[in-house]
Amino acid sequence: MAKRSLFLLCLLLAGACNLPLATQPAVGDSVAASPGILAPTLPPTYTPTAVPSPTATFQPTPAVEADLAALEQAAMRPEYRGDVALFPNSTRYWIEVAVDLDSHAQQAEMSGLARIQFTNPLDRPLPDMALMLWPNDPQYQAEMSASLVVIGNQAIVPEVEAGGLAIRVLLPEPLQPGEVLDFTVPFHVRDIGVMKASDPRRFGFTHGVLLAPTFYPLVPRLVDGAWQVEEAPPGGDTTNSDVAFYHVQVTSPLGVALAASGTEIDHGDNGDGTATTTFVTGPMRDFAMALGPLQMEQRIVDGILIKAWVLPEHASDSPRILAAAAAQVRTLTARVGPYPYAELDLVDAPGAFGGIEYPGLVFIGTVGTQRLIEPTVHEVGHQWFYGLLGNDQLFDPWMDEAAATYTEVLYYENAVGPERATTALSEYRQLVVSYALDPSSPIGLPVGDYFSEGEYGLIVYIKGALFFDALRREMGDAAFFDFFHTLFTAYRYGFVSPLDFQTSAEQSCSCDLAPLFNLWVYDGGPMPGP
Figure (cartoon, rainbow, N blue to C red):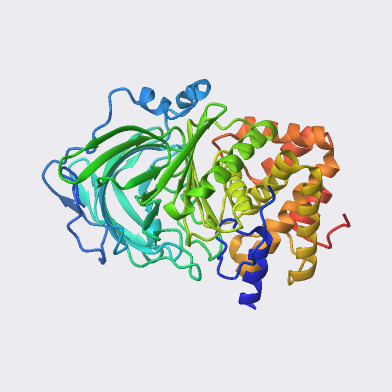
């Protein structure tokens, strides 16, 4: 049953997020350690306890730049540089990481320091600090350790939670409302295998390229006053995080291509066979990078630098990737709202499912195949849905996955023609009706509540896209796209709940959408006819 479900799910999107590609049918397109970087000395396997350890005075490292705003604004389009000032209390990361990389042997280790400044957003003291170590998740082909948290002059050994997926420290003093916690975490990551099309992953080596998303300790969200420290069910996305600012220095072998979230602001040869590259971001939810034998082609689209990073054998696909991404950026700028960042990177990533989205950078797992355009525009669509309009990817995955699938329909309308969009919707309906175990299932369940990964994909991605079409038909085009624009304006860089989403839609159309949301999102039921 699982094999059948995965086959059907792959048929649907030919490469949307987290979908294995080994069983996809062919369908045509529609158009080494760095000086000065402290490497952790504790072994990767450890059983820490939360006991403060008095030590010599620690200096917070990496250092904080004098003019933060100017650096962070460099990662934004000129007309959106003012957005940086909207988030004076957002978390800031200063990360130094050395990557010891052997592309031929396809082995890598990463040693680094993350200095984090976190402001307590609650109206009460916060007694502890939690951090996610996502490379320890089964979707990541890696192991990560972070055995100390340095606060002031104390090195604290954290408690490990969620099977190694998170660490937590009891703070020396409760963090008062609005108070800033400035702390440093040494970390170490190593890959533990090579990706295969039959066993796709988020992190690890593929064709000599190291895919390294969320390689650092990540601050989770505070939800209802508690840290959201949860294991991600198989088949769905993993991370939930508020926007933050990243200042990242990567030391890696000289001559190895490096693609990353944000904007490169400095690059230098260290004279020892390594180079150090510095990236900064505006307000983004995550940071990802890829290193390896990649070739880069770029174009500027409406002030946005779009880069395609591909393996040499896939160089002929770069123009198609760039063209599809450019058309999707223009489509969603018109239909939803503007992309505020200065750069968008698309990385050739065989074995990374069909594709995986990260802010400012996406992995495309189908480069070099006939299934190229749809994964590209789907993952670009995620720059708006989750990247800019956040949602809980564990409990409300329809809000970004159904939306990103529907952006494929919008792409067809704009770049190919309305007839192709209509055909896609008809194909989606037929797939759900013919192959879903329960076509009446609601699209609004958490990832782990569906019968299988395949059923999750059919209902959330595909039936979810049909919900967006039904919502558009109910509201009418003018009100529907006014709703998109209104939602984007109100929640850009924030998080949207299903209730926020429904309320905004009802305000745009001055109508009661409860029956429609109950049928499609909350309760489920037979799908109405086309």
